[in-house]
Image 1: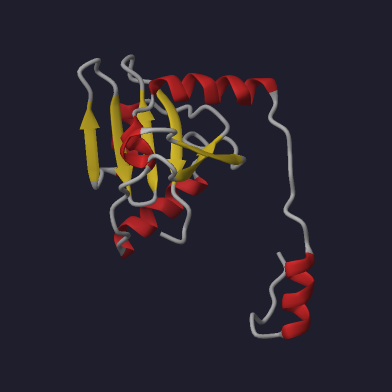
Image 2 (image 1 turned 180 degrees about the vertical axis):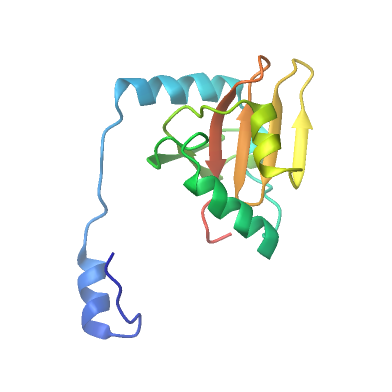
Length: 148
């Protein structure tokens, strides 16, 4: 990983001139997104709690957990309507291997949680929101832009 001094003007000009990388989604990734979007609610895309030092450490552990995040590839999307309309968030593009119960066992009590009438659950650990289906499988992990 390269690092540079943020106030170094020549380095800043070169970095600003770089075009963002683009990539296309694999068929499996598109399927994960479509399945996950059918199971999300309009309020899943915003309203993340304020970070704390303890939850920051949990988020670092989550990033390193290949059972939760088999791939760190993510894409941006969000709610088209409802309380979070116009708010974007990022979603990881690989299906998590942990169940919602296993997420609770691995990371403890979430900062916020919701259980819907169909049995699906949403757990929020600072910058990570873990969405679970009614069968207990984890279907998606999302996180907000870091400039919140």
